[in-house]
Amino acid sequence: MSTRPPALPPRADGHDPPSGSVREVEPPESGVAVSVSNGSGTDTAASAALGPASGPYRRRLDAPRRLRVLIVATNQESRPDPVVPLGAACVAGAARTAGHDVAVYDACFAGEAWSDELADRLRAFDPDVVGLSLRNVDDVAWPAAHSYVDHHVAVARLVRCVAPRAWLVAGGSAFTLFPEAFLDALEADAGVVGGGETVFVELLARLPAAGRREGRRAGPRIVRDPRGVAGASETDPAIDLFDLDRYARLGGALNVQTRRGCGFTCSYCTYPQLEGSRVRPYDASRVVSHVERLHRERGATHFFVVDNVFNVPARAALDFCETLAERRLPVSWTAYVTPLGMTADLAAAMARAGCRSVEIGTEAAHPATLAALGKPFQPEDVERACAALRAAGIRYCHSLILGGPGETPETLDRTAELIDRTRPNAVVAMLGVRLYRDTPLSRSLEREGRIRRVDIGLRPVFYLSEATEDRLVDWARARAAARSNWVFPGLDWRLADETRDQLRRRGVKGPLWELLPC
Ligand code: B12
Ligand code: SF4
Image (cartoon, rainbow, N blue to C red; front, side):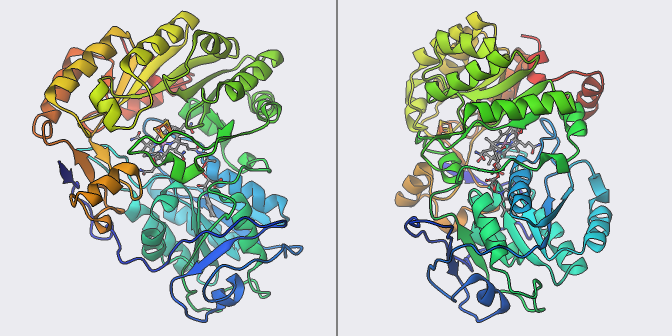
């Protein structure tokens, strides 16, 4: 195997050794508690605010003081589409429900103007706390991977410069994947690993009475919900604070979540780290009411269901579908599914509820590569799932990861043949596997001495199988030339940004891979 980092700017490195650490404590008997671990041991304003200098501690929530909280969604990526910063909206909603004065700044559509706009917002709002929501580390698109780390750092620096007395707290999926490295790079006061709603509100409640930093840098803190990664949200996301009409128009969808967590253990995957390995479905009628409100009040007609795996467990998926179908709303939606358990009955129920397309986490279609990726299904399951979807009239796009563990020229060709047989509407294939810490794949590579933990960090490192690494790009180019519905984001997105924007302005909704000729 070889690990290939693309060229990156200087500050986007692994940032080791870490200056904070993460630890877990047992669940509280009642009330709200968070675990706090301190990497610095310094007695600072924040350690007074956040608790003892080291070790876990508990404290029940008192009525919180009203703070001015600015949530900044840093993400500006517009491929494949601009996406509503749902995580930022969730923590904003939780802080607002807890009685704080909450505003947001969303950099998504600002282009280069983000710094002027953010500086104006900081001066006008004068926040006590700035919460940075970091979604992506990089676009995982080898060989042309693009890192967002410098941008996140630039946002943090601007906040420090314009609002030096505001507490800076980071969170989001990118932060959760590399908390120590981000805390260090951003020079943040604290960071939240996993679901933010409970922990962020608890942090706000424990800031000092003055409500402001005392001009000193706090000892770095990483905090997580002790009840498990990503506790389910009891509060509605404050999506009203975002420009939803623009997202619906230019992104072709609003987003909604029906559950958190994934119980599978695919060898390369971070999702159980991000959301936990226990599936926690939301109450279906609550989610459907949210969809209904977005349709009636904002005219939204297409939704992306952001669940890791929508179709497992099937009972939760069916509940959502039946509840949505009963309301007879003229809305359509797209979701991620796994071939396992993608039965004809479930596909039919999804179609009745308006499901128009799915992205299938197929990843490979040869028994050897499926096993090496830890996928819990066989090539026949992929064929069965596609037949069920086709019969239900749902369009489907395979997500593939090619060139990973176990890949050989033979497995590549067999995978392509099987995928062709399933007659997909589209195929989006990533080349190589972006490594993250603490996945089964990274751990086994570390055990074998093929990579060191410290080398897996903010700077993306990709696993490429020795048998294919020299021919993978040529293979992918040949495949893209032969099949107009195969997309390799690391080589070419196929659709120019201008064309995408034109299609959206003409009112085209849903994933644009649906339009690829097949
Ligand atoms: C759904 C999804 C998509 C859909 C989005 C559709 C849509 N309309 O929303 C699609 C397919 C378009 C997509 C595309 C991409 N995605 Co994506 N996606 C996801 C997924 C599965 C869920 C994201 C989500 O909405 N979660 C629900 C919200 C509520 O959770 P959350 O954002 O994590 O927020 C919680 C916490 O993080 C925290 N939090 C968030 N902000 C803040 C702020 C503060 C202050 C605090 C304290 C806490 C906090 O609290 C929130 C509530 O609990 C995640 C994986 C995952 N399970 O997280 C990947 C993920 C976010 N995607 C990822 C990537 C890389 C991409 C792409 C770059 C891939 C590509 N090359 O195309 C693009 C980028 C798109 C863009 N414009 O940014 C990566 C990012 C990590 C990384 N490697 O950089 C992830 C984590 C998957 C992974 N590989 O591990 N994606
Ligand atoms: S790849 Fe999909 S099914 Fe596998 S662990 Fe990740 S989210 Fe779950």
